[in-house]
Image (tube, rainbow, N blue to C red; front, side, top):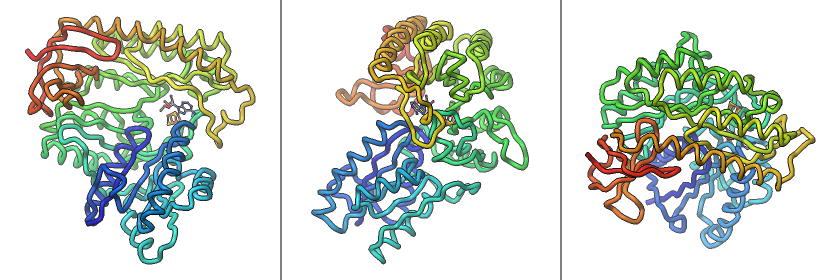
Length: 438
Ligand code: 5AD
Ligand code: SF4
């Protein structure tokens, strides 16, 4: 009985790729183990978005050297975004000679062949497809949860934001056929799945690469008709492509959850231009005001980068001003990280680390009270919550998410996991709500 252990770094796309890798491996008779030490095959599904993620993978791979020395039959495989970049891949392979198999984000379906080739020849196998129009539909996923699932609707990105490595690792944008997506979601519904999260780097441009053009809101409408599915979410939108028909979708499609993640990155028009984001602070805010007016209960979250090359104090104050005006419910905040090969990496005016850290803290100090204020509005309200898991320390404490994607803790029996229950909100904190089943 062969066992594998997989570690996943990075975003939901990678988490979902891991579910596919697990499916592929179980199909050829491998079993998953949580214990790296008893594995015959160890896989690292890597992330390239920031240097910190790269360093973490690099360090953990180093630790495997000892395991490999003790068990020379152990197979070590590395995949994901880091391996899509020639320079990074070559560096990893030169420093970590114990890596046996490297594969990319586009050829997960080939993993059984690659393992087989390695076992037969004992050679190092490197199989990475740099860019492709091809979409492999004959691959399923072993999903982590039965009641909620990620569903890819498109791959790659054409936007080339100047700081971002994704267009170089995930290739050009391409959409899945709507029929395949609908079939996948129908099958999920049949097996009891209630919530789907549609994944793509820029879901607003879904369908543009297909022969029979279809818009993202049309796709949402098709999925809204599937019996059994109760909630539809998506990640991620690009503000430049966020249009009125999506606001209409929020109004008209009862299953579309009232949460919008709309990464802004910066509030300074000068920095937004250098980032190649193709919108201004004013245009962004106009979209936010409009959607808040039409869908008042919507939760809006964002991504913000501090310390982009050339960011001045004045630029940063523009970001704080935008945060106050947009009243984000919460935000993922990042220190700018140089990614070789991107345009921003060539910019000379890098912001010193201490200035970046100082701005980062001031950004959090601005975001947190706004998030708390927004949560306060939910006090005493009744929220529909999809129960997701028990607390790590106490089986009687459950957690789940409201339609607007806020995390709620409450007392209850763990057989409620996967059900949607009504919770009265009794207490609110910056990041979580507390309540009771009613
Ligand atoms: N440095 C810091 N943050 C980055 N992101 C993408 N590239 C970088 C980088 N080089 C952030 C963006 C994006 C999120 C997924 O990661 O905010 O929206
Ligand atoms: Fe990266 Fe910009 Fe594409 Fe998002 S839209 S993946 S930030 S290049």
